[in-house]
Image (cartoon, rainbow, N blue to C red; front, side, top):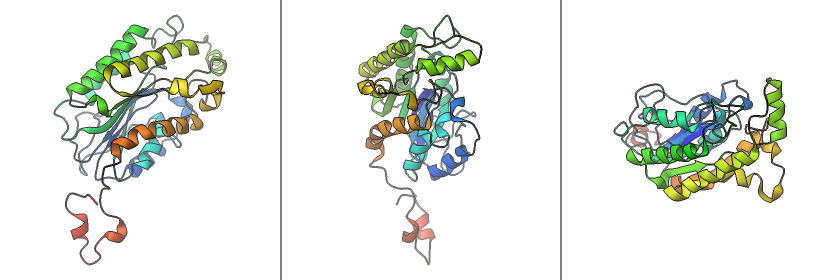
Length: 294
């Protein structure tokens, strides 16, 4: 599993299928980027993972199981999940487990359904957890999504602890803070829907700081998206399509900063199956059968 995020999530799994195929399938979904707020789980796994029961199972096994990639925001064209999948073709599969509008309270409940001890034969290479944009909604204006800061912290800790309990060490987990909020742009969206501004950037910053503290306490890597997008007082509005959701430029920004954290976890993985020029012409089965590694 590699990422729990409010907008989207995905999992990188090592399979005998091309990750590009999975990304291309997802890219056919005709949903606008702004339709998905940030939240979900992303996972990178190596080949040979056992199939999980239920539609939300994180990984499929080998070449006999169906693809479980969800139609989520990060897998839209230009999405950061699609960029990861493209980058990791023939090394890992990216399985996306993003749930639009979810918060950490709901994610903590469903996580055991998505990844169970004993349901897989191989540990994921990496998992990202990306929550905070919905949790930080103002209680008075958006009580359904709002999660108190203290509970947000407890929920993140609980998810990391659960992953440890199913043999995913903290060294394979990456937390991602929520991005900053462009209040002027998001207020226009709220007013168009007949409601008041229901988020504030300063509050989002408190949740981002809490996410950083959880990462330090739990020993995981963390991507501080909230700070990086506002570095040196730069205008971060181009990174957001409507003040809240990532724009194509925002997806590119996230990917460019996440990739170094993922690359160190996958750089040693061999390619699956040989390059086409290396396949034996007379007896291709000699090249193509076996463990599938280059």
